[in-house]
Image (cartoon, rainbow, N blue to C red; front, side, top):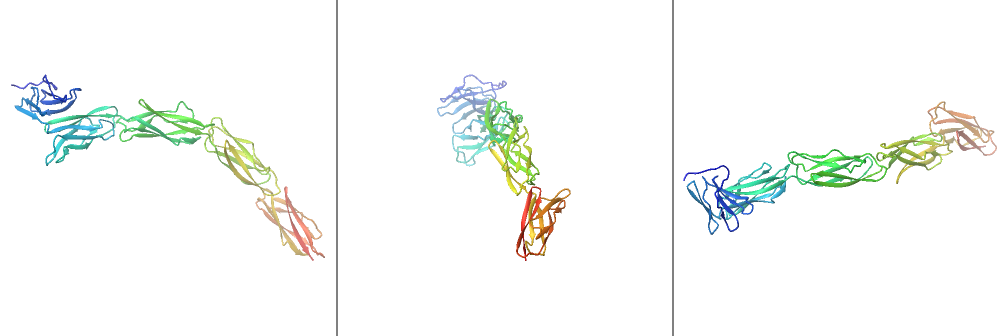
Length: 456
C-alpha cells in the first residue's frame, strides 16, 4: 500500500487505551504518540521510518504493538526508557530545578545515554544524560534564567527512538520585600532603601515604583530599577529636608500587583555643639558664639535657648536657626571683673543640651616685687603683668604706695602695645624698725597689691 502524508500530526481514528488511561495513537507524521487520556498532553513519542496508519495494540504486559509503512512491526516494551520528569514543575527564573530520566530496568555495563533538550533559551539542560551501569535513573540540573513573562518550557528526553516530554513553568520574579536602613534618622540624615525580588530580572529588566504617601518630609528618586541578568535587588537613597517634630513616614514599593511597605521615623535636629571665639576675653570685651545642629532645621525654624552660668557674660535668650540651615551665630557680652571668672554658655533645643567653657579675665593679672624684703635704702623692683596684650597706644597702669616716706613709687608705668609686662623701681629709705609698705597697681576695674618689707 502506498504511503500517504498530510501536514502536521494528523492521526488515524480509534486510539488504543491502556488500563491506566494512557492513549496510544499512530500518526501520518511517522510517529506513535502516548497521550494523557485526561488532558491530551503528550507523554512520549516514538519515531518510525514512515506513516503509522494502524491503531496500536496493547499486550497484557503493557507492550505496545503497531505497524508502520516502513515495512516494520514494532513492539515497545515496558523494560526500556520510561520517561523524564522535572521537580519542581514551576519555578521563578534563576532557580535550578532537578530533572530525572528513568528506565524500567537497570542500564547495561556501558550505561544508557539519553539526549535531553529544551524548547526555550531561558532553560538550558546538559546533553546527553547518562544512566550509569546498574542504575535505572539519572538526575541533571535544569538551569533557568530570568524571564519577562511566564513561559511553559518543554523538556524533551530521547532514547532508542522514544521521546518523552515534561513541562516546566518559568515565572518572572515578584517583589518579596522592601528594607530601609536606618529606619530612625534625624533631620538631613540619609536612609538607604533596597527592594528584593524572588529571582533575577528578565532580559528587559524591571522597575519597582516608589511612593512616600504624599509626604513632603522625604525625597525619593524615581522607580527602583533592577538590571537584567543576575540582579535580584536594587538600592536607592532617601533624603529628608528636616522636621520640627518627630514624623513617621511610610515608603511603599510596588511591582505589578505586589506592594511592600516599610516605615521610617524622622526626628528633629538636636544641638550637636556650641563654640565661642575667642573663649578667653578681658571683662568688657565680646565673643562670637555659634550653635550647630545635627541637621537642618525644619520648616518652622528652630529656636535654641541660651544661658550663661555667670553675670560676667551675657547672651540672648534664644538664637534662631532658619529652616534648612544647621547653624546660627550669637554675641556674648562681658562685664569688667576683678578676678578671672570661669563660666559656661549652655545651648538647649528640646531635650538636647551642649555647653562651652569661657574665661573672663581681669585686665590686670598680677603684681610681683623683687625682692619683697629689703634693707632701707636698697631699692626693689615691681613687675606688672596684664591678662592680655596691651593695644593701641599701650596700657597705663597706676601705682601707689601706702607709705611713700619708707617706699616711694612713680605714679604709673606704660605697657607698650602688644606687650603684657613692664617693671618699675621702688625706692626705699632708712628705717629704725621693720616696716611693711603696701604697693598697689590699678588698671581698668582691677587692682593688685603686694607687701614690701623694709628693715633697718
